[in-house]
Amino acid sequence: MTIANRNVKTHTAKTTLNDIGKGAVDTHGAPGVTMYVKFGAGTTAGAVKLQGSPTGAGGEDVQASDADWSDIGAPVAWGAASSTKDLSVAEAHRYVRAKISTAIVGGTVDVYIATAGFASGGWD
Image 1 (tube, helix red, strand yellow):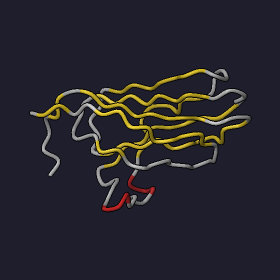
Image 2 (spheres, helix red, strand yellow):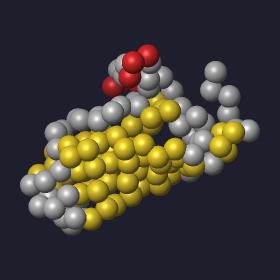
Image 3 (tube, helix red, strand yellow):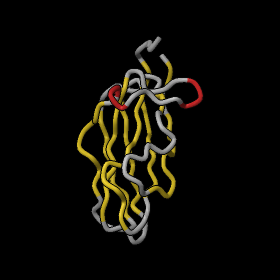
């Protein structure tokens, strides 16, 4: 077993609907995934969803078709400017990504995806 702990910043100062930032994050089989969404100063609306895929990445950050992605939990919706909200799941997904599902209004978001735990699966 190997430890699959990662913390990846996927979005920096983003606002646009359907923006996937840096794209797929390889979980290396981690059984726990958390997405943190930091709503910047001035934000008044918006949401980001976490998605999982068995085929989500390829060479040079090539993304799989949107049809290969499944929503995980409910989108993390705006609650207050200058605040951070999170979504944590105890599910194993080969790849995960964050996708802006409701355009960010009045400001921007930064998004981080963290994975934790022992990678018990062989994703070969």
